[in-house]
Image (tube, rainbow, N blue to C red; front, side, top):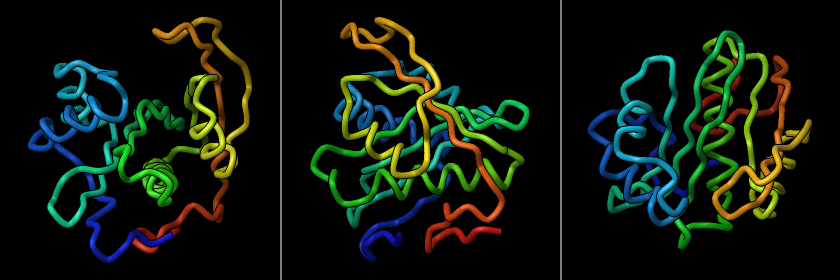
Amino acid sequence: MQPPASLRGPHPLGPADLGACLALDRIALKGLWTPEQWERELTDESRLVLGLEDEQSDLIALAAGWLVADELQITAVAVAPHQRKRGLGSLIVKALIQQGQLKGAVEANLDVSSNNPAAIALYGSLGFVTTGFRRDYYRDGSDALLQRLKIKRGRDIHTEQTENP
């Protein structure tokens, strides 16, 4: 899936993108992480953070993950509310998985709220399967569904911006 020509990315985010990550976090994730947590995400070399920007260079989507041995732990996925239902979530998650694969990941894991049917559908469309749950995990009392994707060589996770090896 190729982003519209007016978008830039997916591309790596770094310390200079802290303000943009915080702003997107506030509107899309209701302030999931603190400034200190975002700073750690953007500076730690074992973590991957990718973003998509619109024609005004505003961050409109991001995906973050940690590499632990051969596992990509996806820690955050956000799409600006006014940009949803355009395939940007799929695009940014696929790009993150591919970057994880290039760095040696053979599986990806994430937690998703049982109250988030859009995210559950997105991850399901990418091949994630639910392997368990954590009861009352989120602030709103919803359960966390534990999901896993085995990353197979040749799996169709490429985007037009980043080709599969």
